[in-house]
Length: 468
Image 1 (cartoon, helix red, strand yellow):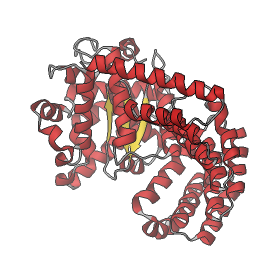
Image 2: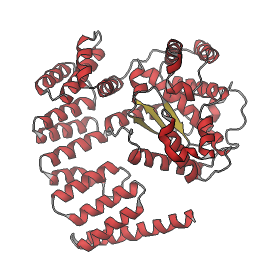
Image 3: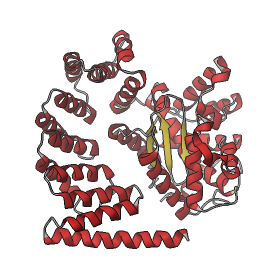
Image 4: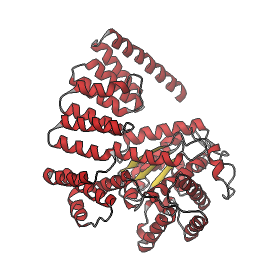
């Protein structure tokens, strides 16, 4: 849980903007807004980047930064939107999104960390929450829906549709540009987080100055980030002055940052445009060479040039990058060659080295399914699903495996969990009723379906009472 006390260590030298708890939403309201926003982003936002590798990396980087907070930053969630514009944003409750364009524009991991640290600063100081409650309606569901409408229209004001036509949503839209005091406060909190986490604090002024120079060269095409995060020479000077007073330590970019950035660059450019650019790119260091060959392998794979993709992967293998992303790329190549069993074993072996990487679990299960071995996929998934899980991807894979085995009752049960995590209890109840009528499964499995149906009906009634 993100609590106001988490900000206290970082308040030294900040402008007096009042107690962050004043005029802010309650922790319960912020949590509910975070849940609604993340649910809508994951399941209803077209630009949401459903890429486990990228999301894992962002959350690992975000957790490293948030762990420096007194409350250890529990509750932060990070994700990416597939959007070439340069933008990032924070929502109440610790929901932080970054556009793929921003990630690709950074030139070092400390630069990306500085943006995420700045956004964490907005959350810790409750800036968005304090602006929202001034609109007069603090109902968590209403605020969450308004925030989502505003999110939809951040780069295209017409995209939010009729929802933004309401006076309250329009007022929130107009206030999404943080005040200069809020921006300075987030800068200072972010710098201290960056420093405490061991990143190079020079990444913040370097990145912001590059953005500022870009606006000067194209005044009518300022990055979206600067429209919601006003950047002035005074602000850049303030950041630079504070960095000068602190002890900056070099921080080499991680291999995962380098490969994630390369993956997103290929995605953003498209394979045909990325290949000549990567072939022409000079790569001096081992890490730069890894990024180049990884990007080329991905681009060739996307363009169905499997022979060239294999060659690029072989060059990458000679550099022996210590990352799960190497194995995941290898598994994709094996599946492209029609060798799903080899892909599954590659991911299974990598899980021993990187046990915390959920992307490897998905990879192994998907590979067994691609090889028409659903029993093997369930052996991977079952240990993680013995108690209700919060990972919708596991249930999607379970539903596919049960369907392949002809166990439709259990497939309906798994799909019900997916719908429940999506916030659609009505659809979840329908699936469990279908599972009941199917009658398949053991006595214990049917009893579990009955119990889950009763629980979902109770939750639906509680939600109905709350809404009334």
